[in-house]
Structures are given as structure tokens and as C-alpha cells.
Image (cartoon, rainbow, N blue to C red; front, side, top):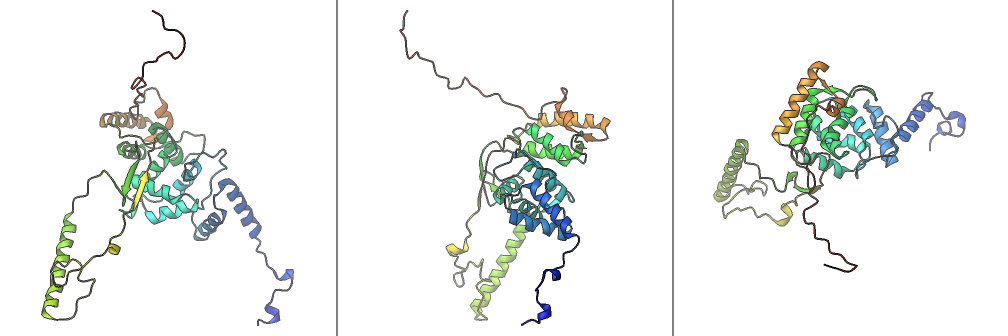
Length: 330
């Protein structure tokens, strides 16, 4: 039993730090501006970021009405993610997942973004500009509007300014999105497109395979000579009848299938001639703007199209109209 003096028996014993009202006020304002889906999880991420000296997951202002994706991503979230992750050109996937989780966003949507970046279950890092570019494509309807949104998200200028960003950053994102095929729904199996060709084995992989075979042959020789019994893990890869490793169904992991839905903000791949024409225009314009590029350059009447728009063929499959009432006369 604790001593009586150590027990809490009156309100005067409660010591409230003088900074507590200010911290609580900031927390309430941040929660109102961000409107998190899971307040408890967001509160944990908020105070964890403050304790570790990281930018907290707080929107700059209240978004109303909220235009978001099915996974909860909004333009305000994208702006804060840029502020949190722009410290490096290549980001660890674990850090991206932590920032994504801080906004209580759907992890399945993050998996789709990483699939389009060609890093999901394949690489441990993702290029910063590629990740932001694909995430921005989820919030728009055309590639042109996506590039305008990315300028507004990456600019260091306050809202209402020209939203200028370095032209090389702009072209890096544009080249990447222009080569991504997001016009239809696609299945990714273990991070690779279902219709993609399997990767060719590298020299390093061939060397590792040779070393594993030599190691397995050595284990087989030990077993024939009656030396120490070979471990089951060491017998993997052995092809002889004496100590053949029998794999079971439990040893074969099930593939992870991720369905990536069509992204109108990225669309179909852009032909090289269109990309080259726009790059020449962007580089020429940026010379008079300190190597910066901005949305008003895209809206200029001299700007070539960022993608070729195909008009839907409304005449295809059109049936001849037959009168359903009235009298047919000569």
C-alpha cells in the first residue's frame, strides 16, 4: 500500500503545466481543420509527430465541401504529404506508409499508388516526385488538370500566387505520368502487372542460383557418406533422390492480387511526339522565368496539348430509328 502522502486526495495536488491550455487549443484547431476519419488514431499520430519533431498530419485549412477519393485522399492531404515527405528524392516505403496512416487514409489506395509507381512489393524506396504525381492523378479527370494540381501542391508560394515550381521537377513528373497506362482496370500480382512480361534473370541472380546448387550438392555428399544429418533448410534445392526436399502446399505463399482501377487523371500513354513538343515549349518558356514553370503557362493559348484527346464515336453502333406510332404512307 502506498503511503498516505503519496495518494491523491485533493484537487490542489494536481499540477497542470502552464503550456497545457495552449497545447490543447492547438490540438482542437488541428482536429477541426483536418476532420480525421478516425479521431483516436489521428490523435496518436498527431502527438507522436510533435514528440518526434516531425510535421504533424494537419491540413492548412478546413476543406468544405470535401472532394476526396474513395480512400479519403484530398487536395489538402496531398499538400501536407508534400510538406512531410519532400526532404528526400527517394523515400522509404515505410515512411510513406506512416505518413499515409497519419491521415487515416485507406492503405489499399496507397498500394494502388505504389503499384502504378512500379515499386509495390518490389522496392523498398519510391521516388518522391513519382509518388506525388500518381497521388495527384487520383484527384483529377485529365492529365492537364493533374499537372496544374501538382504545381499548386509543390509550390513554395502562398495560395493565390503563381504556383511556380522548377521546370525540371515538372517535366520529371510529366514524363513519368505520360508513360503510365492507367486507362483501364489492371490486376497487379505481387506488384507486377498481370499482362507484363516476367523479368529476365540478372547475372547476380544466376550466380546466387549456382551457389545454392553447389551448396545443395555438398549436403547430398555428406548424406551419402553418412556424416551429420543434413538439416531440412539446407536440403532445399537438392535434386538427388537421397535427400530431396519435398515442398508442400503450405510452403508456397499465395500471390497478393491488387486491382488498380482506371485513373482518368493519368489516362493512356502519351505518344513521344506530343511529349517532345511540350517539353520544348516548357523549356523555352522557363528561360524567361528563372527556370520555373507554372499553371498559367499550361493555360496559355500557345501551349501545345499535354495529351491527345480522342472524341468518342457516337455514330458507332447507331441503329436506324423506326417509328413506333402513327401511319406509314408513301
